[in-house]
Image 1 (cartoon, helix red, strand yellow):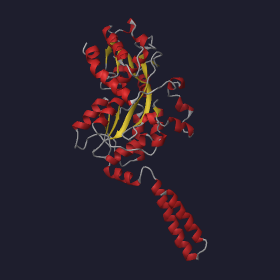
Image 2 (cartoon, one colour; image 1 turned 180 degrees about the horizontal axis):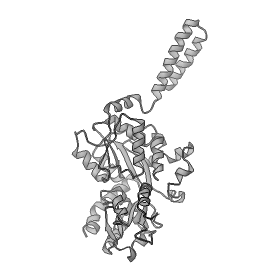
Image 3 (spheres, one colour; image 1 turned 30 degrees about the horizontal axis):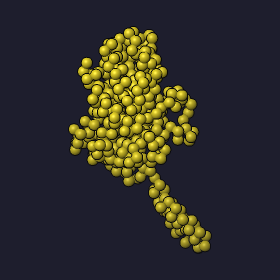
Image 4 (cartoon, helix red, strand yellow; image 1 turned 45 degrees about the vertical axis):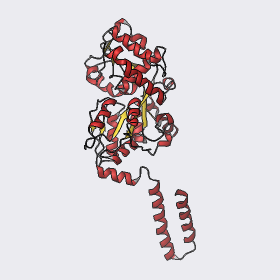
Length: 381
């Protein structure tokens, strides 16, 4: 289409050079129309999707806390770009598993989620149930293969590294490794950010502990055993970490993604709290979340625009501002769009270089192992 249209433009210009004034005016009008058609054909997302999304007037989102990877800023930039499309977020602190339940229980209702932001394990379950609506955004080719589903079911717009956060106002000696967390001085102080059978952050913490204790993506049992021992010793206190619990000192040592700390920092400063963030020296693990449009939801086109936005330059730089590594990071750097100031929010380059992502098959098997063993070994003890 593009080459044929370009040929038509060149031909029209050639003809106009041989005509009279009237024919020149006519040809110029035809040429302008043809150029406009070329621009329209090249627009992405398409005008059809944008117009339909504006007509829908809303995109239903879920489980996007303001301080998670700077979703506050990313949501705001979407509203600025598409002022006629509201983007309410239901249950901001929900787990990935909660998102799946909401999609199923709200089926056919106007509040059913239009898009997900879920852990790789829940992304697989969503695919197995046929819930994704395949859609490849405009920046598809700049997203690494490991960070997207080949059929377009989902993209992983951002990723981060598992880290240990410490409220040093309460705990002066901040742990720097999984080995440290097992020390008696941290009895009753360590928390996971959710249940690893439901929460992507907690799942990642178990994988990181696995790597720290001789396991691998093919054998997650050392990580499960680690947390079983941590609970038996009394060090593992709970699995519910929130901004309020951190500020109150109720969860003074917790495991979470590196990108969740920049959003929390202003609140900690406001409350006179000092803190430390340490990537475990014995277990570096980087993980992503999967985002995609869902099938048969109220606002299909607005859902597609949301996916477009989070992998656009504005969305990617928004994640970067929050300390997350956007999927298109290398492309943005190559284009000169990433400042040194923005890079300061990220983990050290040598840590990012260590990130390796498990395969889809490995993720599925780790999920199965957690489902079978986390209850009897950890949760039910």
